[in-house]
Amino acid sequence: MVAVEEIQIQRIVADGDLDGLLSAAILKRVWNDAEVRFSHPAEIRRGDIDDFIHEKTAVVDLPFHPNCGLHIDHHLTNKPTELQILEAEARGCKIIWDSALSAARVCFDTFREIVDLSDIEQWMDMVDKLDGGKISREEFLSNHPIVWIGRIMDASEPELCALLLTEITDGASPDMLINVEEIHEKVRMAKDEFTRLQSMIDECSEIDDRMAIVRLNGKGVRTNGYLITAHFGGDCDACIIIHGDAEPSEHQWPLSASFYSNSFLHKEGGLFDLTTLATAFDVDGGGHANACGCRIQPLSDTGIIEKREVETKDIEKNIDAWMREWRGR
Image (cartoon, rainbow, N blue to C red; front, top):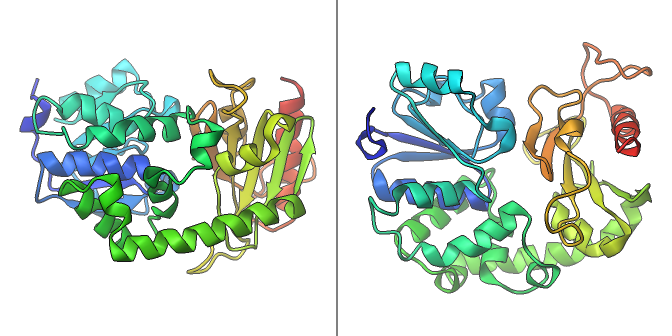
């Protein structure tokens, strides 16, 4: 079996979040000249970047792609079977999967004896907490630089992603990075939007059977479950966040949903496997049991997937179906 460091990697595809960013930075330490592209699970599953992925491509913190040469992940829904591992190895592809809190942790543990990652270690604890749902409410609402760097990381802004990646790969500490002029300005803007989101939540949210349902569709903003569950505190066990637009454009996302357990309340996992909801209608849905997502699907009045474009009215049909599952927990 070929050692992982002996694999030839020319390209890296990573998830466009903080975990993907640190994972890519670690891989860049091993394969310095590799071209990096940030993506998201739906792009991989839909085949949107098939032309970018070949046998010398590493895919990290994302679903497995059959053409890649290296796959590293930690998501439960992406855990490979023994057969998948054997089939991948037969064509020279290596799969590294572990149930760690973050994909970055899997990368760190895999390569720490191969390259010097001593400066990366200062990032790891907070990346684990953020991606693994272990962060405290106080930490989430603090001014911790890694928390804010995570909030500005956005795959739709390739220049920002490239800057963050270069700085971290070159050894910048969180305090150094957040004071880089372009990043400092992005964080300032993110703080303004965070305040705006906090004031917006009550206007577009409801609590139903201890599920916080937040409708951000059409508002041009996104957030994750931490902000929602921090806002509602002990009133919810989990949340559903709807974002995007029925007619996505360059500045909007497709209609989709994210599901999060209230990790501030349930520190060792939620009360319900939320991937049940994420995969109910969308074959591309998935993630962790306590943090996952999917696209809104076109449903009939009886909850059957229809062959048509998604419309705004489908949001409530999807929510109603998910809530029926949730109430049966």
